[in-house]
Image (cartoon, rainbow, N blue to C red; front, side, top):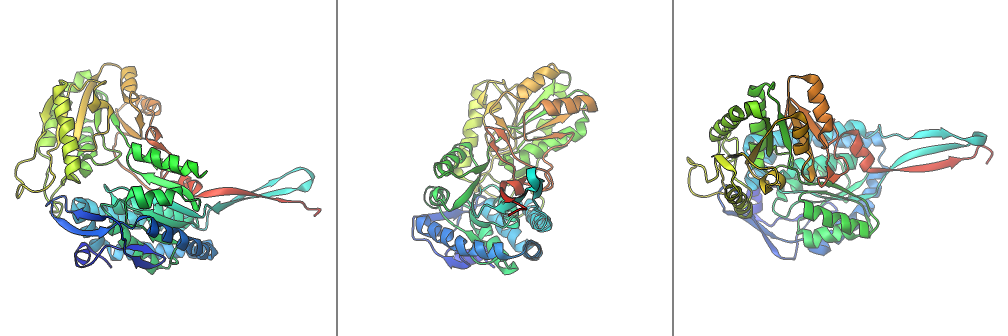
Length: 487
């Protein structure tokens, strides 16, 4: 079992056909976001390692498909048990490599184990149907695996997003080639080894450590890729979809968000404020579902602004290893620079800074990519802060006068991933939730996710669904078999 400490003593190697394979490309450094120290470095797997993964998937995938569905389910259930057994090491490695508070990292690992348990139960329940036609003919409609799926996952929640996609793909009988972010490959590699230990055949699961421009492009553009799955930024996701389409292959995209929470005057403000603080400052705002916009009815606007500002100032920022930390550092120097630039731009545009905006006080030293939880009030709907994904702990608050205006503001951008409605009026809450154009809308709640519910975006936030029964349709295709009773 590899940990960051192990990685410091040896190179990070891709997992291809059950065997660690070192890359020969450009050197990639892994940086601790809390200390800015280099943890280790490794070489890009590049096109040769990607080719090896695709080749291994041919035999490994055939072996996996030869398992009866119940046996595949039992293997996934064993994987869930192994993940729980290794939970603390997985969480500690995730926390250090990605700057995720240890409490959150433990929760992520527990959820990954739950993903494998959930889809273990689905493995023998992916069924088809029978159609009776003219002359007694029958059509068997089967659902079959796609073959090899290529999955590209981001740095902000590496093991969570790896499990989020691997579990359903394997349950449906596919071989999976996962390329995690080049910045955070270690926990995905650890997960791959656990899946092999659980009984997934070598080659049916491969983890490629490398760059998107080399390894990722090779994987997605190959005709052996039955489907490309991408979680990450909008520009890169569109490139992935275009590359897959050039080979006649579909894609599943889970992209950016600029989620709006609508708070009406009759809302339970204690619950709303607490939930929306967590919604934007959880994961340091580096989440596609971050509640980065708060639309507040004018009559309670000043009260909500004051309470959000006070909550931000009291939000515990600190080292990821500290169990009391609620928000760790941003992931990288590039992230810190981008978020700082967005804060400066918002101030120049006239938004009113009511909390944060600079490095927080009280940290152990001057190292780490930290920014304080930041709240802006009076953000104009047309400003970039209200329209563009900042991917950091920056909240934009905007007032509204009427229900219709609130809906128009919520639907005013290009991102339609998530949203929320806060109101004690059940009829209005449901009416507005249905009117908000988003793949997920919470009512009197925020950022509660479960594998049992479908998740995905609309318009600029992508297409396809990454969980629940809906994802099993993403990872299979229908096949019609016609039977002539006279034949």
